[in-house]
Length: 219
Image: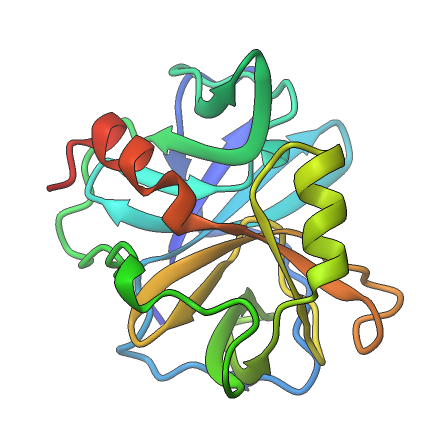
């Protein structure tokens, strides 16, 4: 599968494409995505000495990748990432600009926020989670629900807008949560040791849509 592979290397000037990587399966019970779907999925690799850190991301514009801000964490790249900041506080959502535009992969669509997931939803709504497997992109469909207590705690103590879902699996940080072909969430935290018990924390892309459009020029 022609996955986008973006490599963030310490002390490397810029964001480059890499094909020789070590990957780990993060979705439990997921299936290989079809070869012609979700080509906008990006994997971000950061190497510091012998340590290789893997994050997910999503191509939302020929020159821009949307991911979690903590995936950067002081790595050095040519163009500094754009991290959403409000009242001096950074939210865990980030835009990375590519050195060269991607011309052969259609970007993911931004959310239609009139159809955003309700809180709480009237009925469970199917969403899709993405993660990188040993050789291929993995997909999983699941029913989601809003954890009101988790949402309240995060909104009032950690200052970013976040949704909490209970998954039967754990994807990579920065990976996309997709509904009806549009990206509605960016995974920022998932309890890998308790993937069937602890809620995953997802940045609500609708809350950042205006910032994304202003930064990237998406209309």
